[in-house]
Length: 117
Image 1 (cartoon, rainbow, N blue to C red):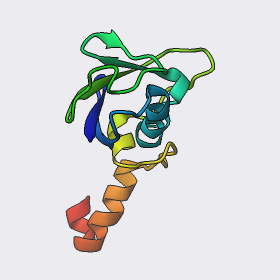
Image 2: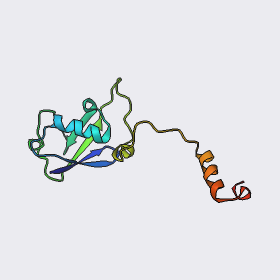
Image 3: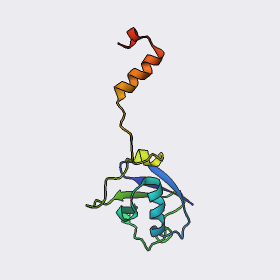
Image 4: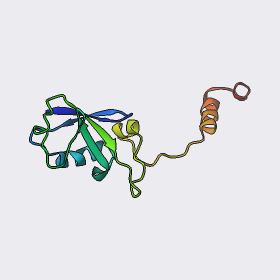
């Protein structure tokens, strides 16, 4: 069955699981999609926090159900990747780009020097 995991104030990702999947088994899957460490994940369904020993069936999560993911704050936990980047498979390291220098370089390829000034 497919369920949706929604990062608060972020994107949604669909996960294929079974009713007998434990929450503790779901967390590493979520980690691979959203880059949130399993020990920093707090999963909530219909206002109820899901514990590691529960199965999706125990929690009453149906096909197409939506689980909300909240990230626990901790001293040792660096800020997670922006969820939009995470769902699109972007890596944690984003190269620094000088926007205006890149823009000028690209414009010079297509325009004359007078047009780019």
